[in-house]
Image (cartoon, rainbow, N blue to C red; front, side):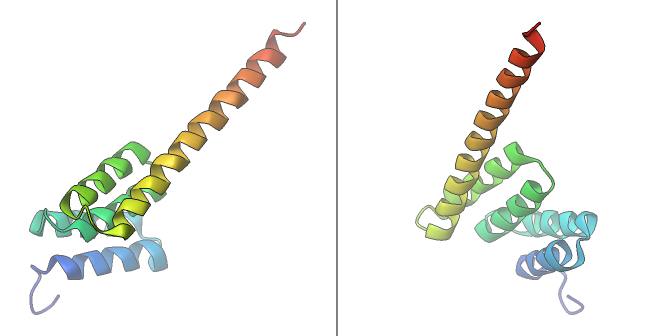
Length: 111
């Protein structure tokens, strides 16, 4: 980075390190966004940024980033499986929340 701050790959690596090892979310976001600014066609940057968004609870944005990664590299099995897992988990979460809400309403409606 000291020699060339324009390498998107280096920014992705720093962002991942900030996110996973340092738990420094603001710095991780900054690094991922810088990587995407430098190389918007870099599928790996979109995937790792999606990971950050997922951890941050921004699931819809995470899915959009994963879709972008798959658009850029449609034959990459890691990217397609990550997108599938996220959509499945989101659907499962919505289903569980719906069931919990229905149960809560039933309990509250019972005299």
